Structure formats: C-alpha cells, structure tokens
Length: 221
Length: 251
Image 1 (tube, chains in turn purple, yellow):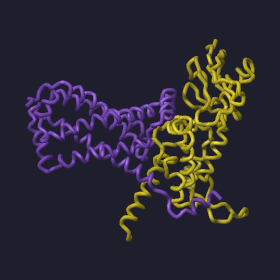
Image 2 (cartoon, helix red, strand yellow):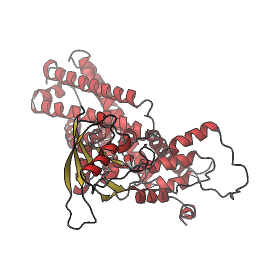
Image 3 (cartoon, chains in turn purple, blue):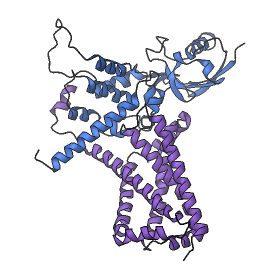
C-alpha cells in the first residue's frame, strides 16, 4: 500500500535538503559580503579620492589576516555556491530549449529574473575569479594601486561590465531567497521587490561613482 | 460594432498518424461579454466542427478549459475577449499529455500527483459513520478551505519553469498546496519526516525555483507562494535541526 511506504522507511534521505539549505546559506553569505565589499571600496569617495580611509580599512584587513585568509575563503565559497546552485540549471540542450521557449512565450517577470541570474552566474564565476586572483596576488590593497589598474583602461571596461552583473545577481538572488524560504509572501512581495530593485540601482550607482573616483580623482601609483 | 478577432489556434491530433502540428487561423466578430469559451464554441459550430477543446461548467469551477492564451495559462471560460488584443493565439498547456488541438489530459497527471503526495487524511482512528464529526476551529477550517479551492486546472503547472524544463518528475505548486493542506489538518497524523519523504527532494519542494509563475497565474488566486515558502522552510529547517541533533547527541 502507498501509505505504508513512508511509514516503513527508517530514515528519509536528507541530502537534497542539506544541499538546498547550503545553497541558501552560501548565497546569503555572499550577498552580505558583496554589500560590505561595495561599502568598503566606496570608502575611497569619502575623502574625494584621497584614499586615506580606504587604505586604513585595507590595512586593517591585512594586519588581521582577514584579506589573506578571507579572500581565498570567499573565492571557495563562491565556487561552492556555484556548484550548489548549478544543480538547478538546465545543462542539457533539451532542457535549455524548453526553459528558453517557456520564458519567451510566457514573458513573466520573475521567470526572466531567474534567466538573468543564471546568465550572470557564469559571467561572475569567470570575471570574479579573474578579479580575485589579480587583487589577492598583489597584496596589499591600496587606493593608488587600484587606481593604477583602472586608469589603464581595460580594467575600467572590465569593472563597468562586472558591476551590474554582480548587483543584478545579488539583488535578484536575495529577493528569490526571500521568496523560496517564505520570508517574502504574497502580502509583502510587491513592496519588497520594489525595495530590492531600488537597492540594486543604488548599489550600481555607488559602484559607478566609485569607478569614477578611481579613474579621475585618485592619484595612481 | 465589435472588433474582428483573429484566432491562431494550435491544431494536432496525435491519434492521426498522418497529422502534422500546425496553426490554423479563424476570424470572428466580437460580441458583448464574449468569453474565449463562447468564441471557441462559435468557431466549432460555424467554422470547424473538428476543433478539439475541453469545457464543462462554463463558470471557472471544473478546471477543464485551461489553455495557453497568448502565452499565459488561464481558463477559457472566464477570460473575456475584450481584455485581449484582437489577435489571440491559443495553444494547449505544456507538460500535460496532448489529447488533440487545445485539449490535454490533466486527469492522469493529477491522479499521479495525488497518489505521489498521498493526498488523503492519514489516521489510525477507525471511522465511525454514526459518530458526530470531530470539531475543528473555525479559523483553521477556513484556512484549510482556502487551499481546498484548487480546481486542478493545471495552470500552475503550465506556468512553472521547472515543470516545463523537467516535465517528467517535478511535482508542481498544486502538489505542495495539497501537502500544505494536510499539514494544517489536525486529523492527519503524519509526522514531519513522513511529509519530508513525500516532498523533501529535488522533485519536490527543493526543486522549486521560486519563479512564482504558479502564484501569478492561478485562476482561483490560491496563495501558492505562501505555501511554497512555508513548506520549504518547514522541511529545510526540520532537517537542519535533525543534523544538529545527530552531530550533538544528548538532549
């Protein structure tokens, strides 16, 4: 009998619950990191590109070994998060085609948001790794060194592209975590979705201002 | 004078081995308070008696006439043509087995789903037909009723990205709604682990991508989003608690 099957089993298989929980946990952790990262980098704006505040913050993270240990840990968390989340992605051509056809025909906002998240995930994985390798193999971080990189030109284009990718992924990600884990409900979905959109725009704005400061105001080494 | 509506309708009869899927075009003068149900019946009566589509109640209760209307799943009987542009494309719902043209077999799918989630009250009590029914708090009864309103039309499944991606396995919001309904019911004696056995996997709640196509398309406005969230949290957190207990035995 169907009913007895569930009762007869001694222990349910819990792996998929753990993996989904870890996906959420690493996601929330990385979102928190990215927002903190943005605030710390944007500290270069505080003294109009003088870099004193940013250098002090960077010094604090290196003196406490948070950059040396935390940096690679963040990289590992990102890769781990990618592997966990990629379990949900369609990798077979048939599945990809079905998902794409559904998204285009259905034309539904939240379904499009998921597509954006899936596409940005691959971009962030590659560009994020390049960024982390470049920064972490050239410690200590200073405003002058960052400015030197950005004023070279190509890195400015690199960050102008990476910035919206990350902020979209992060913004949509935290909204979708809220939805999936029941914190965003029917009653508050509209308000919180609007809040998330505004936050994403603000974060991209802060990022653009910071890039402007690095390009024009900070004295490169 | 009403608009002239242009209908692009999917045509295919899987029973006919020579048939090839195609789109047929029909034109119809729009009348007052015209619904798609009325339009389809007129097309069948006046233009093509072979057109296949399902309907029964004409009042949004039976769930038979769900189809893809300009890309979005909805019930033909409660969709007014005046809310649509003059060109209307009608397709059968994906995921379900096609019977012909706009008609799909939701029945087999829903039967399978209900069996999979064991959609009945599990109790060890013996039913006493002459005893007065067990009392239930009114507010709780209302909450359960809210979820019981599902008419099994299949719109939530057709709107689901995951179900479209993997039509074979994924349970869909309607199944989670069923489970949530029995979890609420004090008469059902299933434990969290027993519910977990049913929905605690990738075909179940952990496969849900949270795209909310179901929530936005449900013609009965059942609060599906809230059920998905609560179910994932209950199932997920109960397993984390279990892990902590396993790692730190004692209390």
